[in-house]
Length: 77
Image (tube, rainbow, N blue to C red):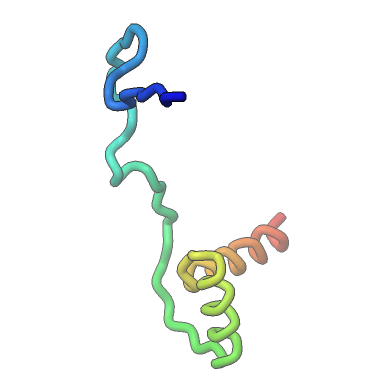
């Protein structure tokens, strides 16, 4: 039995052009109001966050910032 070949490069059915509604890449991620600080951490702490961040494909600094933000959220009334 011969298989039917389907051309997937061509549209199927009636098409309607949709206006581009997506924002530019620079507007996709809202920037937090941040302040740069210098902080000395133990080697073990930094190694822990780097390991966990690598496993979750996120920057380790972002994980530390999130941890601090969550702590503040818990202790702010």
